[in-house]
Length: 454
Ligand code: GLY
Ligand code: MN
Ligand code: MN
Image (tube, rainbow, N blue to C red; front, side, top):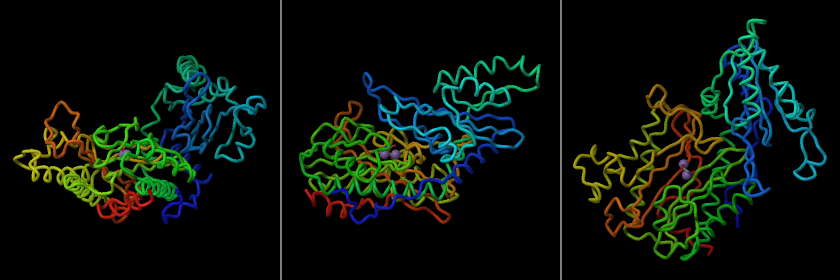
């Protein structure tokens, strides 16, 4: 169990090197104006109950620029006169605290092991950050993550007029760092692609394992346990809470109660992905728990698969972000017209939100990377973005016929069927590379695997 089904999961690709992280810092320092200070506050910890916290996940920007995964850290990059300097605030060594929560990296070790020029104790942030701010004209800071940092920045901006009058220096502009960082993160490097491919491979193995272990009546949480057990067994963790929905539950897009049995004759929709070094996979497969599609299930499944293949064929440099979505919509709308589920009469009308949108109510794609719904503008200047080599997006069309829905009269033949098929697709120089293509999705492949190890 969990060994990978012929997929090589043993070699975790290299994490980004210090040089790569430094070059990312240099790029952002060159994008912001001279005399800027960019501040990245790590995610705060979050209480689950009493003194128990949720498992900690560092902010994706902190991982992107520093590779630092622990809480209570603040990273700064300054660009003064074209010279970049980086500074990381971290909790200092403390034997008592380390006894409870684990060893910390000392300030000197941090400077040696991470891509930073200087490390300081987070306990000294007020004075040191204030002095950095005094020397900066533009401050790139996202508010709301740390009261202390927000206050130091506010105080510095309030002091500006007096300070600038005295010295000619001082912060004058507060800017949101997210748009400039998003543009960098949108284009993936070879290292990032290798990590995402590995994350997809583990995700694919987990989905295959769940197919093999399946039996009628299996609980959704038991399927979730197989999937997430495989993630953990292979050194990863989920990148978003797993969605495992049988029958009508598959028609709830973000269902994650995962607490019902999947009954004989029902489809199960599993939307589950993992992350490696922070890099996500996001994979959905839908299949019959008893190993055999009914006629109605097969018709709708094949339609969603055809629409997904049409969308993937539009993933190439020069196409727009909307092209795969439009291709998927076209196939789905024509299929539903042919089945008499929507009325058209034209294909254009069939593709409208009132018709196709009743059964396919989400977009086909989102960017994926360090965040499962990754950063990057979809329509700069309100025009769909041109796809370029190095971008990674999901392709995930679906059809949902929830029997529970009060707004639509669903023919009994289709009621309780929810189908989504999702892969992660890298745009390459000549077309695309489906990073999750180890995960089976044809009807014949699925039927031959389901239940084979139950
Ligand atoms: N797993 C959430 C999504 O597919 O967007
Ligand atoms: Mn997705
Ligand atoms: Mn998904």
